[in-house]
Length: 210
View: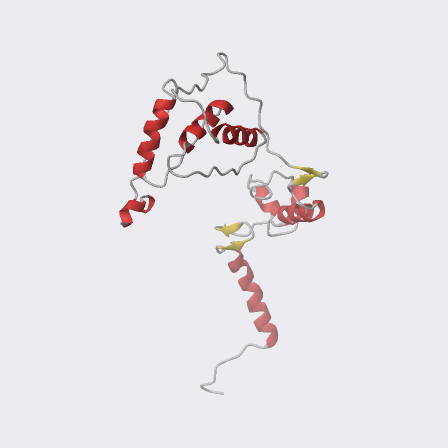
């Protein structure tokens, strides 16, 4: 009838949809490996063009044609192996540890950490030093030394550093105390390197909030 829009029969619509498939395959789209900027070429077409059958994988044409589309086969295989093997941190029931190559011995043995002081440990200090050194040798990562102001905590820790012969990192809550500690340790260890660092960010300085 005049003025009415012509409609395609059902068969005609299916043919029209089929013709649009090549157009969609040649346009950019999303794949399991990211954004595809070209057509979704088959493995055989890529091989004919001199490319790898599957982008990013060194496989033959025969292997590529047996793989699932979308580039997810390797991921599925890896996940399946992970699920079947259990905790990846364990292998055959043994906890995984990173490879640490053996360190070569120092040719001169290094410089000994030597404390210089006119005083000797007294009072509770010998017991505290002994307990702290034993804790370090036993790999006890958390130890606390309590003492009132002027009880000799800094001297005690300096003796622990000398006894263990291990470098130490000392943290102070503000720059005033840090400067004081630096001065004391510099006197305790005049023959060793004693470095001093202060951050000037306000949120690292409690006195900035006073």
